[in-house]
Image (cartoon, rainbow, N blue to C red; front, side, top):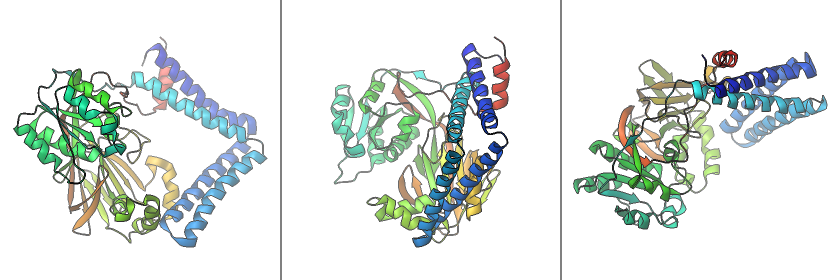
Length: 432
């Protein structure tokens, strides 16, 4: 392993920071550092158990459990301050952060993974765009998307919030009338419906991030601050071939969720009072008093009675969970499967072990089937609450969608490699 000069020096920085993070406590506190490390781990475990009780119980027990979780962390910090080594804890955390970022930088150049292929294409002749004027607090009107798209020759249909329309039917009619590109300015749920039609007809699809979160646009590297810049795809665009997910007969672009989260978001009260609804319903969902008992099955996978299951169109980055982060690729041809099964405080504390925890399953699969002890389950599909008859098949459709994006995109990132300390060591010791 040789690598570039920059990657070798980044690896050396990562290894040096990691070694310093281990050595510094021993130099400052000697053998006491081992006891202090044990205190930190015990404190984290007790706090994790307290949070489990807080989320899975109601009333006085919830209040006491939350107080316990906070008090334990406060006590740990007070102990470190009292013995005069709190600064060591802060420096160690900073050193580990430096080690991780430098390690990712080093392996990013030597990780053996290539960026997603782009294909130069001529501009479309008859683009058809659907725009939701209410998405994202009115981004369509605020950025003048309709007017700017029409200047570029696109046919634009504005959805009428007072009269709901079938966007998939609109897209199919447009294809019948000769549209050679379909696009959406709206949320991820609407994007998925029209993307499914584009894939069926093998014509390009264009994304304008006019929704609230726009996770799909994030993973495509699009400018989420100014969706009008995505219109450059009509004049100076490239195509990507990406995967789609399918649950039953419905397409999704991000993820589908089963279990506790899906049960909570289906409540009519969730839209108006999210926090109160979560606190009220989550205890019953976590203790299996609400909703169904799920079973997840795949080619070499079987998980019984998880409280929550997230199936994503391509896996999220290591360390990124539940749609909070991003996916390095959208063309790997696999689903990311994450399941959590925690039935008591001890298992909640064990989640600190990450992927080695028995309560956390993180795998990839081309297809999974979600079954339940009821004839119908609630599912969150790209953030929309729906119901499906059981069993529910979820499959990956590799490279099913042609996506037209601007040639220059601000958010394109290199795939992040896993932190492999053996590879980092070898890279750090390599000579140029």
